[in-house]
Length: 330
Image (cartoon, rainbow, N blue to C red; front, top):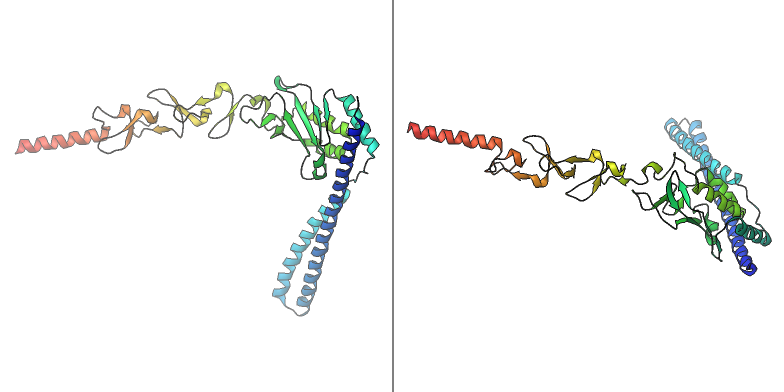
């Protein structure tokens, strides 16, 4: 049974938000016009000074004022463009309450799963699969009291009901959804136009279509890397077959950021590995020790049983031979 009393309250809320939105847009235009007026006055003031400096042959002052006037004119041109852009935005007439109620009724006919309350309208999508990656169903939640802020806030969120997030980022539940916000792409203006004219069916249809589409040019995470894991060092997303687990720091790395210890064959990241100065091969920290004499760190193969490196071993041998020679001479 249709709850027409609820629909009337929802229509009233939407109309109020659209009135607030229109007022904010008009106020924004007015503020921009005030800025234009201030920039114009600054140019007039500098122009008067420039005229006086030229008339009295004050060349240094004229040069400084010329630079100032050029900067003011550039700023004025920028502000003029902002005003022009604001004036080009079509101000849709506030729809009648009966028109909004008709949209709500049509919304329930167009979508199988719709929830309507005084503050939120929710449409639940069908299960979405993109290039064999199952992403599940999503909630499209339109927050009615945020419609007035759509110039800076999208006023809606995309919530995954059966989350299958990207392996590299749990906040990416869809190639074009991050932190429950949709990357609208070319749908930005159609979505805004649908909301400002209260075409609710069009709004939910456009968003639903974007969720069913994969754009390889602008994903938060590419669908080919969906099951991947981000390298702890360089953040490169790696597939399961290309990732390496560091035995020392317990993090996952890509091939370029990892190596293998030549002593124990354990995989370690570059930060946890150590290049032995004796043989110049990578080893993990567990397969190293300090030379007893020079206290430099070497791999175990480059230290003898007395924990001496090759140079220190030779040095001890030379000292021992010298001691033997001295005893022989004596």
